[in-house]
Image 1 (spheres, rainbow, N blue to C red):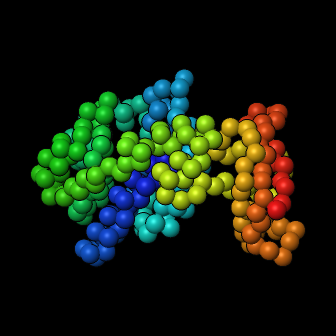
Image 2 (cartoon, helix red, strand yellow; image 1 turned 45 degrees about the vertical axis):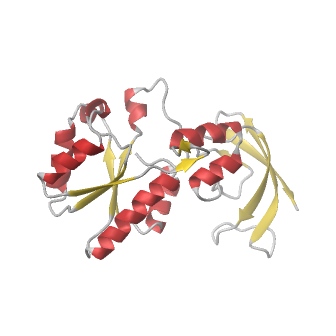
Length: 230
């Protein structure tokens, strides 16, 4: 499950894209919806860093040609690592290579690991490439770490682990339904506002700098923006 496309994810994606180019193949991403934890632990679901629309666009921008979104169910969660690999091969008969992070786990209760994937894939004539983890401040970069820092407002660390500046996409209204599950705490932040063609802004400039104050207002999950230009 990709969440946020951080530095570690991008290393895996770039390797897959380059590998596909060298073999004159097609690069693709397999992801799941909803997040597995929302199905298996609905009382404590994972709060996603970005909405699906933003995530998919960033995937396409990275050079990925095909995005396969598999519905995650309790039944699918019971499948063994062996089933997972054989199902991939049946669905993609010409599959030549799989790229994952070295800490990747799959199958029932995450029982499959990289070593097992390599062994299982060999019998199916699939090459498996495990990419080393990326570290920040001596700890492995993960969506969990990014989420924890985001919810504390530690944007410097969030941006370093994402590999790009954290952002939100909003329409031209002031109060709106907040589309991001994991979010910053209420407060005042220095931001850059970039207008897209479909979103008019009252200025001839395309980029505005300033501060934004975020505050939760009823109904639930609505935010109010107070914009101060600089």
